[in-house]
Amino acid sequence: DGGITQSPKYLFRKEGQNVTLSCEQNLNHDAMYWYRQDPGQGLRLIYYSQIVNDFQKGDIAEGYSVSREKKESFPLTVTSAQKNPTAFYLCASSSGPGTEAFFGQGTRLTVV
Amino acid sequence: GQQVMQIPQYQHVQEGEDFTTYCNSSTTLSNIQWYKQRPGGHPVFLIQLVKSGEVKKQKRLTFQFGEAKKNSSLHITATQTTDVGTYFCAGANAGGTSYGKLTFGQGTILTVHP
Image: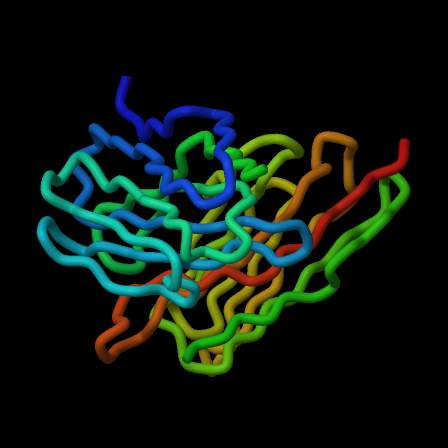
């Protein structure tokens, strides 16, 4: 089955720890995105990548880091510098800039 | 940077009533997309509008793209309980270094009472 996979679905971490969220796609898409969703605030763009080995900051990149070493993978690290990391994180991919985005199931991160 | 505003934030309707959500961008868009997110789920693509003034229909859903390519609307005729969810618009940058970047509106949460 083609698609985009995020793991895990639920993640709990202690405050001060870095955590990496996985995102893998087998759709052969060039573009990948990370969004954060909080109640009442829609989807806010954290980072996006239009091609392997290149990525750009989105609107709320502070406290996050990414890598794009492979076309299929775009992991997101939530660092201890992120002041309010508890949220629902969504990864998406698309075939090119501004085209239809396919979303993963999301990872709900809770920091305690 | 580009901003996409969406209203209303919430809409409660009785089954059978119509529903409309509106989307406005601070900049001209190359295209606008609409997504639906069911409760507990992830956003799913509905449609993309590209041309100025474009109107597209999907059964009871009608999508419009403004003449200036800065605003859009989604209208649902005779809502059903299956329409429940959050509807998002997403604008794609028309150019510059952020070309193709998708910026989502805040979403409209639709509740349908049977």
